[in-house]
Image (cartoon, rainbow, N blue to C red; front, side, top):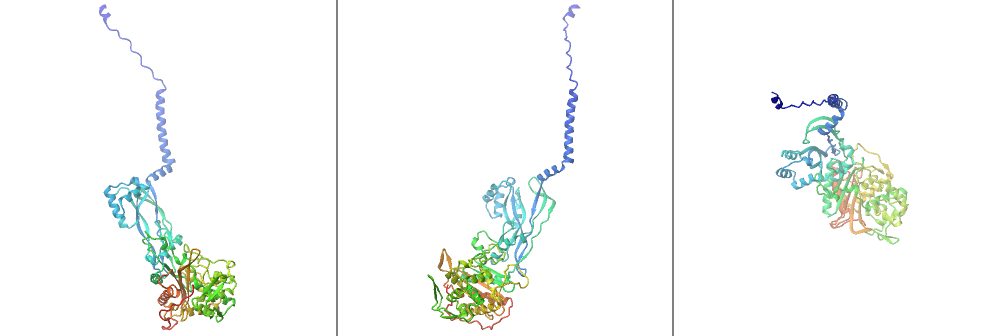
Length: 582
């Protein structure tokens, strides 16, 4: 028994389990509890205390504030005929990194937009965040593009300006750019009046940047205001048609025409040629966009002679019947000689205007103080902008009288050495069409007659008006400016064009300014033809007939009573061209 007991295996006593620190369990659970409490506290803080922060972050990721364009005001003529109006169009845009189109979809999109897939791809590659694929397309074009189902392609409503008058009104009205903001003409000059104020709205967008829900209208758009111009559309079309025909018939470079209301100073028509279509400006030269009647200057030539004569009459230097010796039609001053087209011999002051004598005008001018001539020229608006508010209108050039040399004062008498624009010239003639008042001019509709500033006395105005009638009648330089049934007063102008530091030998500006009916003037019409090259260049032959056609039609259109018999027009024999020296 002892042996068996001796072979029984011996088991070692089991090692006791290590005892955990008494504080570990409470510490672990305590830390977990603190973390849980921190999470709960942070949640409560964000939900109740920093709520605005979360709202802002959420809005930044899921909402956008979109601009709501304002409807631009219309431009209308004096009778409410629409000259410019905004129509709704669509623009297609995309975020390049969200735009996904198969080659076939891209090809179809290019076909709809009348472009190429390569151009669309180039446009997308050129921008990182946002790009327009097409601006101001027709709504139906946008719908066709969206129907392709291209991911990331969006559209938005915009406004595009439409000009019913097209090329006839182009230089007056101007045009707007992609953002519907004025770029030229009245559109630019009256931008603040026409534009209105854009509004905005907040929308919810999805992960594909598509607006899925309107949240709120933050600011309602304020539409622009309509603008009524002084322009009479009927007279504008008439002036444009006749000016275009005259420029083409005389193979001229360009032309301009102004029709002015004597009583109100309103510009009833302002035509230019060449022109352009403001509805399609893809490849239009900037030269065609100029409103030459306001932005271009020229030497007015003999159309300035009446102002020299008026100054002399006011100063008491001459009377209408004072005789001026013009001799053989030449006058030498220093190293320079002034010429007349035809030797006139002894001419009265009235005949100096009727025959358009340069020598006679120069002699009368030299009898005056230079300051007196300058003051008259300045008082009628030469050397200052016409203040129509039109962008780019120019002041012309009128040098201070103290700088005039005798030869310069002499040539200034017949419109050389001074430059004006056509609107300035038309406005200046208001002193002869009224009782000596120069009227302010405007492109905006006004109500009733406006006051002017007196420049000459009523007696002087009446005397010069009679001389201007003689210039248009038999024996004058502008018989072709006569109008059937109406007495007409006006003056021709022909001037060599400046080229470099001198005058071009065979380049002229031909002009005519006149008013009718002479008994009670209603309209002033000024015509300028630049570089006629069809064989004639005198103002009486080139610009006079245009004046006659436009003035006659305009007076009849306005229902102005006649003041002459229907057989009042007496023209010189065929083949005889009456002109003034240049």
